Length: 160
Image 1 (cartoon, rainbow, N blue to C red):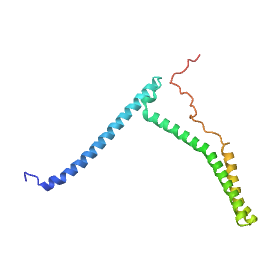
Image 2 (spheres, one colour):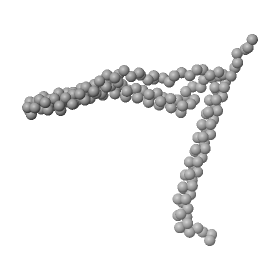
Image 3 (spheres, rainbow, N blue to C red):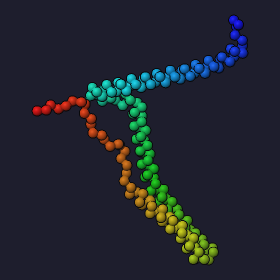
Image 4 (cartoon, rainbow, N blue to C red):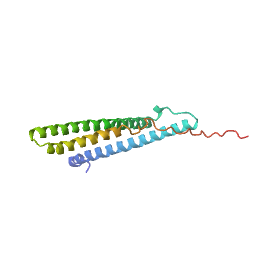
């Protein structure tokens, strides 16, 4: 029993590798949590001393703020494009409707059917066009978040 059989050694290698990988992940998570805690303590100490921390001292917060700004700009861009999209769709539908009116009138020699089918599409296009006019009148969202009032640093003004 002094020697381990090759079958047992062969089964132990994957088990040790898995346990080692799990240990590395746990140690990494603990180290990251400790580092983040130290960053927060440093930031709090700077604020308590009346200093304004640079955005580089909290890169995650800075990245989060930049991401939010980009999202707001993307939403504004989509809102401004909505009016143009409706306008294009309206003009296209009106063109198709008038085209069907002409086609059915001359090819089918039925002006009443032409006005019915083509007129429907013209009215739909006109509705899209009017919708585009209303889209442009929506109030724009501000790019920057509203400013917050300055917080006190804990010092009280002298009372007389």
